[in-house]
Amino acid sequence: MEQSIIRQSQSAFASPINFVKKPTGDWRICGDFRKLNAVTIPESYPLPHIQDFSNNLSGKTVFSKIDLVKAYHQIPLKTSGIPKTAVITQIGLFEYTKMTFGSRNAAQLFKRFMGQVLRVLDCFAHLDHILEASDYLAKHEIDREKVFQRLKDYNLKINLDKCVFGQEKIQFSGFQVSPGGVSPLPDRVKALTEYPSAKSVEELRRFLAMINFYHRFF
Image (cartoon, rainbow, N blue to C red):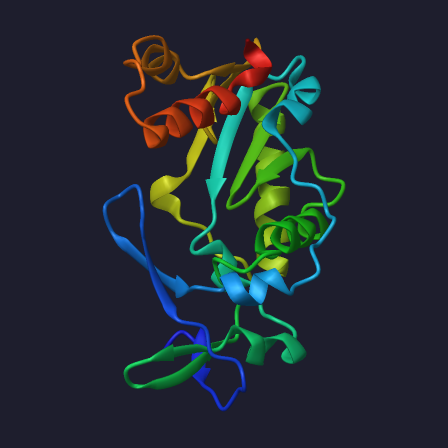
């Protein structure tokens, strides 16, 4: 509440709380919006793939990755949509004033917003990461300042600890980006080739998800 992400609510909606484990081992608290999502009209805005941007990498030699801090929670919700995000807890009913994980159209709406923020700039946004690619270092520094200024204009904050600047190659959203283009991460490919035979439906689904992530390369 101190960060103005949630507030007390008197909404007629009430979704349960859900805990999702993050890759770091920490837990993310969000609403279990499955029932709300079932009656939500889907947003048609497309979610891009890094390979959609790969044609723009021709001739690029310098790369940076910019990470946004709690990206969804930096985007304010429309007033009319806030009551629908209400979640029930042991200490009462609360509603989100900022975009939250778990809602059906969160990724699409966030991508639409980032498209507006970064319009006409030579960079690629994938969820809470921004890839900047330039022909040479001096131009890269100019391009990066343009991105920073645009983020400042929209009051978006970055996580410097997770940002990487001015590299000849970079890891971005599960891929390696270099002057040669986009390729799978070597350790991910090794994990696929050494994946043991699935002994359960869950293990098979996990393997198929890994294959599907890199299916354009096979």
